Image (cartoon, rainbow, N blue to C red; front, side, top):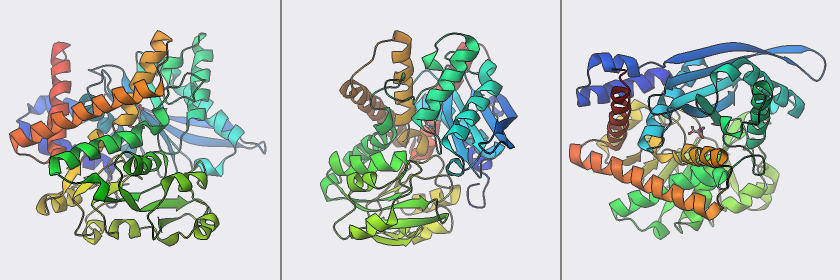
Length: 428
Ligand code: GLU
């Protein structure tokens, strides 16, 4: 859930606003407001103690006019059909804005992955594939990691699919581990992609990156590499990161008088994004309430956790110094937050542009799987930078040409490309 608002209602509300601006034919809108196909299924898993537990699984395929559906699988205790619908819809726009030949999809399982053992997780992953294998595939729908899922899980899922179809099919999942069909640079891709767009936004706003400060929400895969990129590529400083503590199920904000060192925090964070508090304290970190990140003095705010945390209530706590909000997460800012940004002249880099680096590198991964020829990390990241920079500039140009807010401009670029593909295929 996105605060008080349902994430899918939020995705539809954003779409409806732009459809109006574009004068889009209402019948075409009706096609795009809803996912094309949806799957809901139960996954029985034998637990280590011999008991049987049944998990709820989902996959939603929003639109595949531009190519196979593409998007992650989330393992989250609060997953709902509607969050998966919203995330699948955003994937369609994300792939279109990034200009990669893929559609939008998303999957999920209602589970807290830290509450089950590794063998249980493997059986759960294989169970998801046993339900979905007929409806996914390199030319149909290609899932990937997201919140709560890891490269190792993609390795198991790819293996299960390959067994079901009787042949090694690495291109059915992306975000796989290196050496198991994965691509160099995929781990860093989403976070670095966020920073490529921040760099371009700073150029546009004539800001000096080396004098800038960022505050980040979250310390999972996206936030970790966005923080590293902000320091190492732009020369900026990190005011704070926040993180979920799986032990007491509470979120905390971590700051340091000399600025946060993301490379250090990376050495004391576990696979679920929980930082070791004792070690952080020993290294001089100040640990505060998990919502404090939004109040920190900074130029760039990077919400990189989950949807709806920057909303009508929290947005007012933002420091007056913020010039850029770069959405590392999917759907972190609600329409009320958008109103606040517009009123206060805050430059927004919308989620499906800002965090498109992950899926873009997933696309590179599937291309490499198809060729059975693998690129170096340098080649991957160079291609990623080119794609992200082109996508940012296409949206910025649209925003300047139509005099619209960046999120609306991103929707305009994306909707135009998807509608064109549907027309060319004779769907509409
Ligand atoms: N889960 C990521 C996203 O939301 C990556 C999706 C992918 O690589 O397919 O963009």
